[in-house]
Amino acid sequence: MKQSEATNKELHQAYVKKLKTEKRLIRFWQASIFVFFFSLWEAASQFRWIDPLLFSSPSKIYNLFITKVSDGSLWIHLNVTLFETIAGFIIGTIAGILLAAILWWSNRFSKIIDPYLVILNAMPKVALGPIIIVALGPGYISIIAMGAIISIIITTLVVYNAFQEIDSNYIKVLQSLGASKSVCFKEAIFPASFPTMISSLKVNVGLSWVGVIVGEFLVSKQGLGYLIIYGFQVFDFTLVLFALMIIAFFAAIMYQLVEKLEKKLIRQ
Amino acid sequence: MSLLTVNQVSHHYYSKKDYTKALENISFTLEKGEFISILGPSGCGKTTLLSIVAGLITPTRGEIKLDGDSDQKAGNKPPMGYMLQQDYLFPWKTIKENVLLGPKINKNQASSLEQRARKILEEVGLPNIGDSYPDELSGGMRQRAALARTLITEPKLLLLDEPFSALDFQTKLRLEDFVSQLLKQYNKAALLVTHDISEAIVMSDRIILLKPRPGEIQEIFRMPGELRELPPFQARQHPSFQEIFDQVWKEMSALETK
Ligand SMILES: Nc1ncnc2c1ncn2[C@@H]1O[C@H](COP(=O)(O)OP(=O)(O)OP(=O)(O)O)[C@@H](O)[C@H]1O
Ligand SMILES: [Mg+2]
Image (cartoon, rainbow over all chains, first blue to last red; front, top):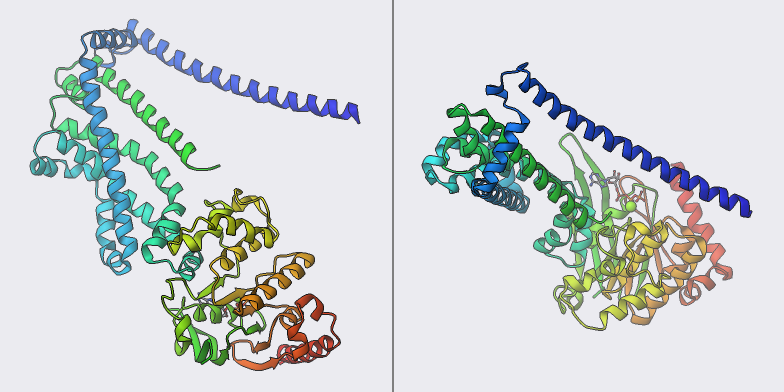
């Protein structure tokens, strides 16, 4: 009896150890790919296997990073783009959910509006860019609008779908207890669709970056998208790649934050 | 006037291609404090009938009348408590929050509610689980929690759709006694759907037997007075229990072979 208890413990320890080794192995390969990629890039650029004018090199980008940090200009551009993206993301998501709630509220309205939603969803929203800029002026408002509009319709469709999928018997329970339509929404529809809303947040993070960067391509005097388009115009690809990496880094951070939020809000 | 009058109710479910007759020409009344059970084969429209009585589905034909004083906005409490065939506990609410849903919807914020919830959970045999979530409970426990959620609003008329189906025999007997005593004590009426003939016999004053597809009333049995007075557990042992059981059983078997 005692012995089997001991071996059970050993078995468990072996299992934990195996998990740890596996994790370490994965981390090792991830780091290896990172190092390998950047070393290869650096070497290729140094030995002129690729054109350094076009593809730059990690060391040049790093130097640029140091200058931009020390003269403070990185923060200016970063702030502008982050602000626009977060604003676009929040507005797009909230407006999408509100629209979905309106559709849920009126079944007939949702049926009427359905083909228009399908068209709007299928249309590439960035094509609206010039019109938005003319309508809202060439400033950050337009860019935020770009960041928002790209995610509104898809959020509406996905969340509305989730609203409809709830088992109607939950509504019956509430109605039998005397609940009004708005109480049904608050007590059943909304909380039941919570996981869907959170997962649409994750999609919207990516979409808002697309909208904002394209918006900055079209008009802007500042921002990471502006740096890319400016670098392209003066043929400074170190600047382009530099901006690209900053974008990748912060987009990943935002995504991670949303994931953290998801873990926190949804009870496992 | 009777508490509930069901007058020539028929119900059809429509789809684009076809329609299903679920109920055909159902009429009966339910008096104050009376207990009626509905027996019938699966798919004969029992759930449909309860949903119609609860006002959740409008019948294709016929009407439901509720006695005036228990109807509409008597202290904005719903006059009926409907327990669905499955528990439909909200998975993101704790058991206590689920049980307190009715009072919350009716904006009842009495401070004694917490205590009432605890007491009623205790009585259905679920002490100390108020803070658990539904997915941590077994099927039978969930069913009892749903029963507690229905009972806490103290409705004039209870509509119970197979409330004891997921319970082990002992718990079932205990809860039958509990519900039956509760109803007697406050002189409340109930409409119970069940598949269990003996449960129908020991709980009810009358039993309505429905025919299959479309559900039509085959027969209404009136339970003898001596059985009605006894609590369910003791009624099972009464000599006249077997007699009435055989009678209902025969009638039901005749339906099946038809
Ligand atoms: N929402 C619905 N749409 C279409 N048909 C339905 C719907 N609900 C029930 N029906 C049909 O109506 C008939 C009666 O259904 P109901 O659920 O009332 O039966 P029941 O007597 O409660 O059965 P059970 O004892 O199995 O619970 C069935 O034939 C069923 O197929
Ligand atoms: Mg049923």
